[in-house]
Length: 180
Image (tube, rainbow, N blue to C red; front, side, top):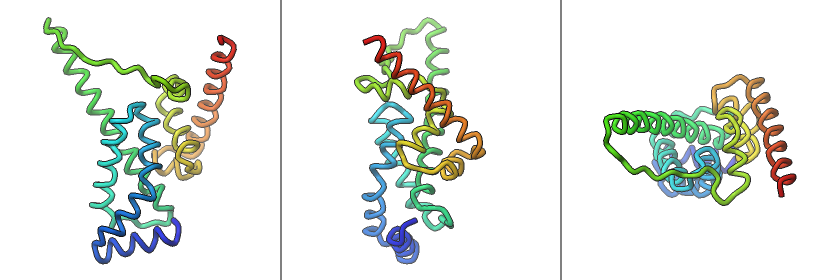
């Protein structure tokens, strides 16, 4: 955690200074939103989850203990919000499937992963663990140990996911290049 982040966190915890928290949000919102956009593949969902992340960070800032960097702690909250949204989506999809099975027709918009961006399409081709670790380590700039802390995975598992994900991405882009 940078010295200035440390001072801002201390000020927020000690006095409830909303401006100091606003500065933390300004510093880290691009990172959080970018990470969530890559994980979800949907910018609108990423915006909602980023907002939930910062609300939860505000509510729980006094629980930050270090010694890791503030951005790692914040990414852990964001990743947790992402996992919760996946659970909600799965429950919703099960319910929609049950309704469809009963003969009711419900229109549901289908989103195509990575519409418009090759990187998003390539990331959508990875397994969930690989995509998560690649996004955390490359797009969000976390170290392997920080990504392990965020995801709760062993560091060796994170490294494996990153290596496999990187190899699959290279393969995916090679196939795209050969097809063109």
